[in-house]
Amino acid sequence: KSLYNLLWGNTMHDEPLVGLDYNNDPFPCGAESWQMAEDGSYWDFPLRKELVWTDGTPVTAHDYEWTMKWTMGNGYDFGWYFSDIKNAMPVLNKEMDPSELGVEALDDFTLRIYTNFPCPYLPMVMCFYMAMSKTAFDKHGEMYELDPATYNGCGPWRLTKFDRATGCEFELFKDY
Image 1 (tube, one colour):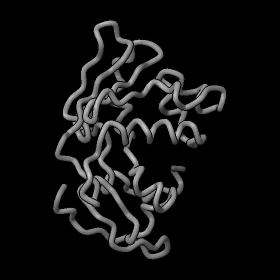
Image 2 (cartoon, rainbow, N blue to C red):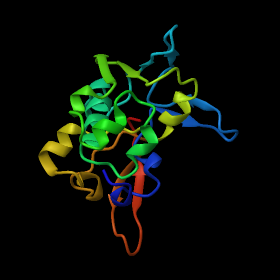
Image 3 (cartoon, rainbow, N blue to C red):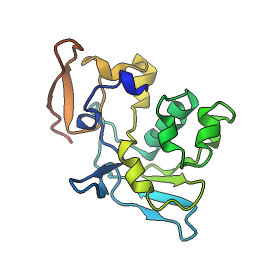
Image 4 (cartoon, rainbow, N blue to C red):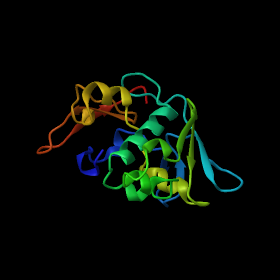
């Protein structure tokens, strides 16, 4: 999604793969942990199995993979931020098919991210990597998160009111 069309405070309602604490040190959010390959060519991110969308379905590595391939393949305006991911810039510039992007779901709960070179800071970059619900996207379109009736997030809050002029309201997502 375009950064300008997201709900502001997006980490309130969508869990990023990695978070940053008060010291800007990375900590697990959507991922349970991470591990860089011995040769530095990729990172594996095992996901939290209890993380669910507000519709009750599990958040999977396939959601994260689909999100990154869709956004980069559709010219995400801040896609350059993820340029350390293998083939990110050619995909973003429509010189390569999104299927060639270095993001892969190894199974339902393991995400692998290939990099252009050994990238020891990649977990910090992933603090802005949030999954979209493909189910809600397919059913309601790209802006499904801007309507409480179609909203499907995976963070600690659920959208109850959306109004760009007066603000948004959220309630605690009890299954978070």
